[in-house]
Image (cartoon, rainbow, N blue to C red; front, side, top):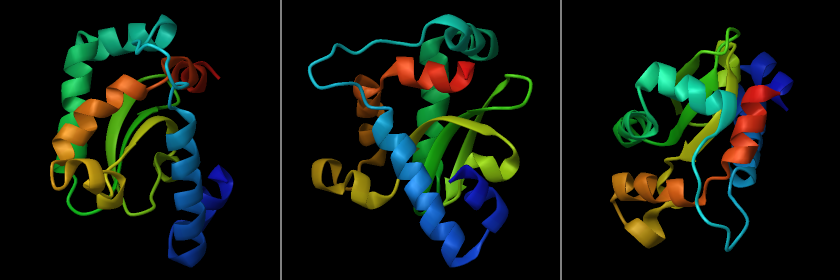
Length: 144
């Protein structure tokens, strides 16, 4: 799917493949029901610490990017080829793979993702998502 998104880069195939890829990554990063929330560990945690000085500072920047995205799209944490982390805002169906990045974590900021629970309070939705992230899945994306 990543190859299709990377090669299509625009149009109907890109939009459909991009949304499949984005939603698959989004839903697979949620922790199992009833499991306690946890935070990153290992190499990913070390890189977050190195670049942001701590998990809370990273979360604040990530939430700000998600809340600040005009219109519909996705906030992403990705890694470059050297393992450095990058937070991006992607419009519509876009995905960081089109920029040569390895996507690790995403928050859906399309209104349909949060309106029933949060109405127009996108920032509250973003803050709540940390409670359901499975950092083992996200770390495996970084390590893999």
